[in-house]
Length: 331
Image (cartoon, rainbow, N blue to C red; front, side, top):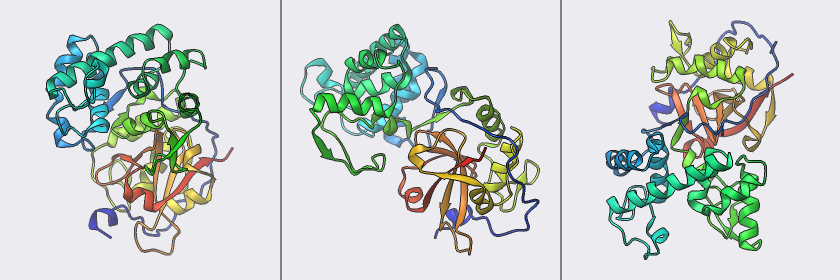
């Protein structure tokens, strides 16, 4: 166990008070249609992608989508990791052979294409995740979503891919797929892949309780982890952060990660919604089953007291090994 992850530990301490939840909460997913409510998580982006940021900014401005720089960089990370020449994998949209574009030409075409998707998204009153998925599926997916509720979901993406693939499945071992397969048309998990490199802001959360929790939690983003800390004055450890932030929304949590787990309704991570808690085991040696807790924010992301406090990608190998599941506040 590395020193970094030992810092996530919460040793058993005397409970401030074994309080149970006094306020019921429901939470909505964070896939709103607000195209300005995402910020890039540059700590997850490769140096190869970040070196193209100024070029992306130039073409996003040229094609009228200056608010989409973060999304374009995240797409580039998924498409190529910034490596090779056709960094946006956009040559085929011009009818050219794969990899035939220079990085500059690839970014220009990729941004131009995504701008057209944003235009269609707005015309059909669908949402940003629909446009992101359409970068992989093609523009026909926007029309499909427009006639199926106007809001992206993994189920809608799966249904579209199944129809296009005639039901044919292929092996797919990426952690975003619980079953280890996908339909043989595009990648129905594309939004989940791109979202790994985007961090939501408060504007993403439609539920007012979740907004209150995240408004408070985000005040301390970037601050160091402090073992045993439970206030802004002392700093925060994992359960100290969750108990403090939820209290600001009128929800009283027990003090430790284990006690918070014991007092929640246990659900799978696949069923989790923004505002649920997410729990982990084995992050350090202790008699407690649960050793770490974070706030689920959607799209396999959490906000937690790491070192420093901030967002984390639950699809990474470390978190996958230790993940137990999510917990929802009992009504």
